[in-house]
Image (cartoon, rainbow, N blue to C red; front, side, top):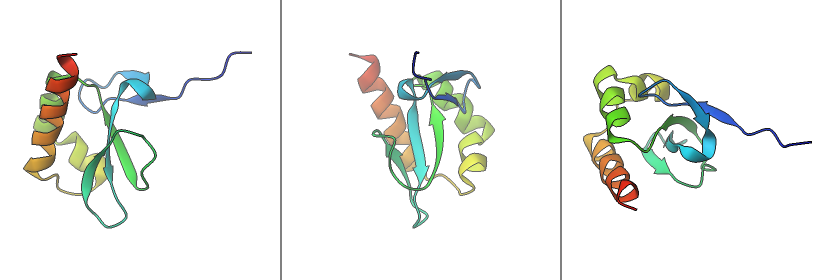
Length: 90
């Protein structure tokens, strides 16, 4: 019997994909927003495809802010954009 693959929805394109394919943005218990590449950090999480277009859509619609229930600092968006560019270049 095959193991079930966890699915999550991208906040940009709204497509459901395997959890491992997405980048997790987490609001920690202290209220700080950060990126969680291991997928295990405690706190409320939201997911994005590693695609700059999905990040732009999520930023325009404030989907991450609604999901995490906290304003997202511009530094987090900038770091997400840099990480996506680095992964896209691989």
